[in-house]
Image 1 (cartoon, rainbow, N blue to C red):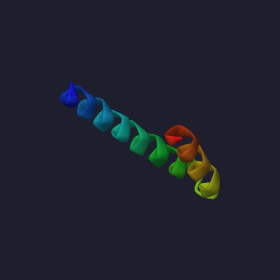
Image 2: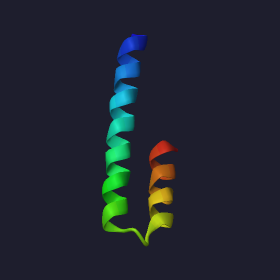
Image 3: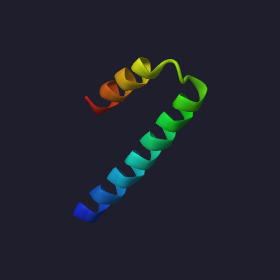
Image 4: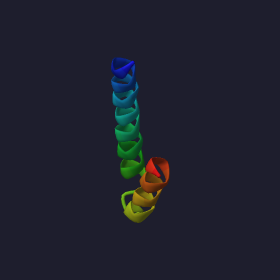
Length: 43
């Protein structure tokens, strides 16, 4: 059970990292919006 959670958590972090990287490449000037989106996802 714990191992499954760790695996899902790792996949989620990897997805989130790639998502943020993609946004930063496309919208470098819009860093504040990226931070807001991350906070909404993690809330």
